[in-house]
Image 1 (spheres, rainbow, N blue to C red):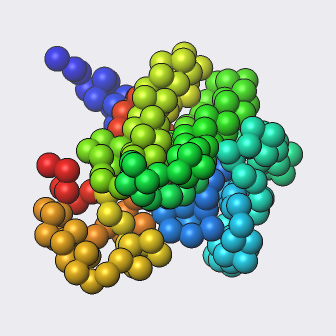
Image 2: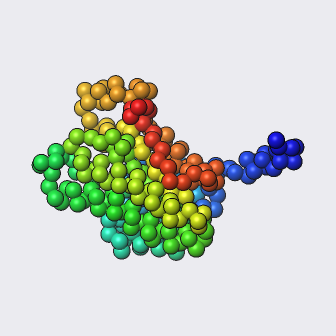
Image 3: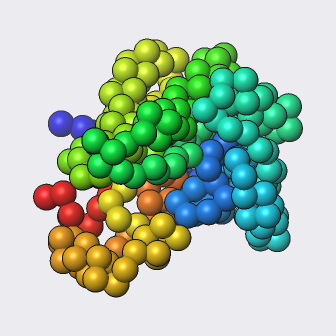
Length: 265
């Protein structure tokens, strides 16, 4: 049984654990649109300074940063192909040189090159694995060096429900996203002693530019498979990421959080 003193300590502990990220610095890869953009904006609203990473959509990335600054937040833009180790390291170095620290890494960058197994080209397999899986490795390896010295960090990998249940025509994408699950669990074991948590978020079908281009008949079929009867919104994924990046999630690591409206039940 707990006495009044212990209950008071618990209450004070709950009060001190806030879902704000004041003074934290985050890097979000692939943040010029979709889920990455929503994550960057949500982290900034929670108080974090954010580095907006992009590969080719410079105008979109600048617009994201401008929107954050207009709302009183802190944001900078940096171009890097995270599948290349030198560019991933440069991204991390930029965050540290610009903001003085790096606390949160969100590995969101991803591409698709869909095709049936027997027709899939080697370059399509390599490209998807390179960005979606190796990119996360490159960024996490560079960021971990900074976080280990600070003895605090959050690494959040954006996987996919496809990595858990598979999807025809996406062997490369499913393999990369499933690889992120194993990567998350292994790195969580390695870095936990330095107070660095590593978790994965596995979204289902989220309303983005990619899903917007689907034929209406396909969207209807998708919605029929989703228990909640609708596609998810990028902001709903972003809210989960903010929680995992906050002090409220300090005792959670090595986990995979499915956010799919019940599709994979």
